[in-house]
Each structure stands twice: as structure tokens, then as C-alpha cells.
Image (cartoon, rainbow, N blue to C red; front, top):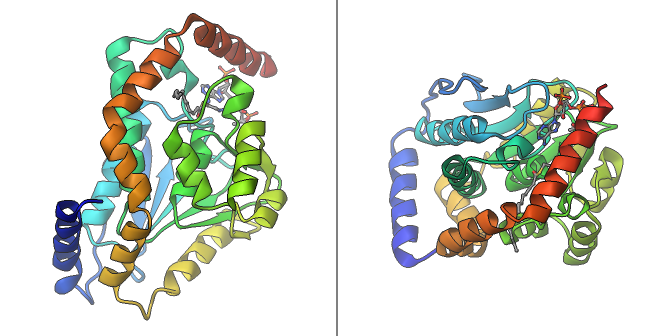
Length: 287
Ligand SMILES: CCCCCCCCCC/C=C\CC(=O)SCCNC(=O)CCNC(=O)[C@H](O)C(C)(C)COP(=O)(O)OP(=O)(O)OC[C@H]1O[C@@H](n2cnc3c(N)ncnc32)[C@H](O)[C@@H]1OP(=O)(O)O
């Protein structure tokens, strides 16, 4: 983060926290594929992804998540908990249909919106946590690891499985993973495309706690936010943003090249073939 960005972030934070210490605001859901519910007492917003069956991250869902994050930030919420309306899938990651035989304009819009959603979530000044109430592969894992804290239900899986699909996780996916896991564990898992069970994820630190139900997971996320009760929100947010600034700045600087690399990669005939085979294998499972 350069000096100008830092000053602007500081100004936003001062505006937000300067005069509103004791007020609680109600956030409203902006999208059709998400809902946002705010606990009026705690001021914590629960952002629920609701694109069933698997919360595949298509352009519209990403837009809704992005707009919700902006609204939660703007409405001075005290925390953001990301979760899913499904009882078995947090998010299946990027909707492969967005990348398979794509319309090129939409493909650009899709990737740019993913970049912006990540910048907003990873760099959010509001405390963030994920209540992971289902499987969370690839892009689903990216969303969860972009948050500051993770509580997961047992018997699901989470990880960046891109190498198993014949694709390469972009640098910022890897940076997000490395912000959570020890470097050695992250490199092994990334190269293997490893999906961790909930129990394994807890052991390596990919998630912070397990919970037996979604309600308990949300409660544990709220308890995490309570650990900031005696901190200054401005100092907290600036510390988080400075801690993450290298990763954020790198994508800000390389956004155009990252988009170009994505478009080039996705449009390779061999990648299209691989995506088609993978989609068929997913569909065959349900027959
Ligand atoms: C040098 C640098 C260059 C940079 C290049 C960049 C390259 C791109 C990088 C892209 C990065 C990230 C990639 C992703 O996020 S790709 C998505 C990866 N996701 C997965 O592999 C998960 C696949 N899904 C599953 O494993 C399972 O669905 C599940 C999540 C475990 C849930 O299982 P389930 O039994 O509950 O549901 P299931 O019957 O499998 O699915 C129901 C229907 O949903 C369809 N579906 C599932 N996942 C996806 C998906 N990700 N995209 C699209 N569609 C999906 C599935 O086919 C079923 O459909 P239908 O009902 O049969 O029609």
C-alpha cells in the first residue's frame, strides 16, 4: 500500500469510527444471490451466499458479495461473517461454466470482479470470519482464507485443489493461503492440490476451530470479534491492512497482467478440453 492509499484508508477509518462509537446500524442485503443479516445488538453482519446447490462463484454471485462487503463497510458494521445457505457446501469455488467455452467480454468481467471481491474482502477494515458449513474447494477456500478467522463444521473438505484440475492458482490465491499456513505446509498442499478434511485443516491451522452446527460456528466467530473489544478499531484496521499490504499492493500493481494471464490460460485448447472433461465428471456423479 503506497502513502496515498494509506492516507485515504486512514481518513475513511477516522470518518467511520470517529463519531459512531455507540451506534448500531442495520445493513440491508443488496443482492439476489446473497442475504445480509445484522445482529442489532452486536452490529455483526452475517453474509450468506445463496446460490444453490453449490454456491458456484459466477459473475452475479461475485458482484453481490462485493457489493455486500462495500455496504457492510459503509454501514459501520462491527464484523462480517461469511457463510452459506447450503447445509453441505460453503462454496464449490469458481463456477467452471464461466470459464468453459466463454464469452470473452463476460470472462473479463468475471475475473475483474473476482479480483475486486478479493481486494475488498482481504483488505476489509471490518473484522472478518468464515463459518464454513460445508465443502470449500478452490475459490471457496480463497474466500474463507481471505477472512481473519475460520470456524468449520466436521466431515467436510477445504483446500486449493487447482493442480488436480490442471490449472495454476494465481499468486494472490497462494499469498492468501500463505498468510494462514506455514510456508512449507502451504507449498506441499498447493503442489499436491490437497483437500484437507475439517479435522486435518484444524491440525495444520487452515481453520481455527471446529463447531458442531452453523449456529455454533457463527457464535464462535462472534467470540473471535469480541477479542477486539478492548482494541481501538482504527488501530486494529490499520494494523490488519498494513500486515496484508504487500499482497494487496501486488495485485493492485499487477491487475492487468493477472487478467491477461488468466485470459490466455483459460483460452488454451488444452485447458478448455480439461475443463470440459472435469465438468463431465462432475455431472456424471449426479446421474
Ligand atoms: C501462470 C498463471 C496463470 C493464471 C491462470 C489462472 C487460471 C484459473 C485459476 C482458477 C482458480 C480457481 C479455480 C476454481 O475455483 S475452479 C472450481 C474448483 N472447484 C471444484 O473442483 C469443486 C467441484 N465440485 C465438487 O467437488 C462438488 O460439487 C462439491 C463442492 C464437493 C459438492 O458435492 P455435491 O455432491 O454436494 O454436489 P455435486 O452433485 O457434485 O454438484 C451439484 C451440481 O453442481 C455442479 N458443480 C459443482 N461444482 C461446480 C463448479 N465449481 N462449477 C460449476 N458447476 C459445479 C455439478 O456439476 C452438479 O451439476 P448438475 O446438477 O449435475 O448439473
